[in-house]
Length: 189
Image (cartoon, rainbow, N blue to C red; front, side, top):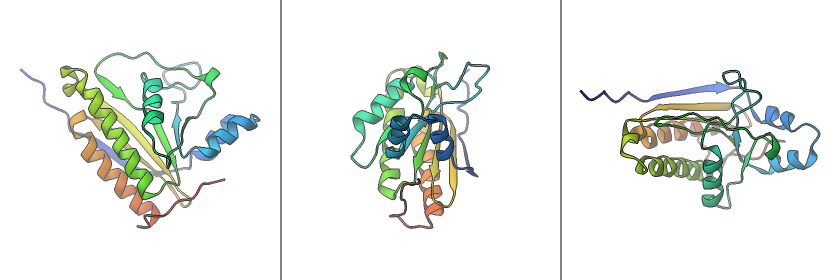
């Protein structure tokens, strides 16, 4: 008997801004801090994950990061919230795609649309690499870190519903956050 496909879960909530904490983690390293300040999409590791020694990224983050860098347009600058020497990735197994938390700093409508397309294409490509992945699970979180508030959009569910469920929620959150101004967004300092 075939297992039923779980329903997608999408959670949208206002959360504290993550950008100051990301910069705080950079410490006194001015070069790294400046690098983070230039980015408008930052991949953030999980803190205190099941007793891991320090912040860790989900499996496949390095490939995902390269994918974003290879496919980003001039309007997106993607970076990791840790120095290269502090990078640590979990080694989980199974048919689960766990996309690292992405913080988008004061993006505009075009940047949000580009990020949605990149995420959707990445999930689609992952899905094509194995028939059993259709029964798998995708986890993703994007934080839209705006000037007035930060909105977290979390998705967990089957890969087949990711694009529709996640993109609709992300666009709605952006529109609410920016007050419907598609040109909203300027970098926080």
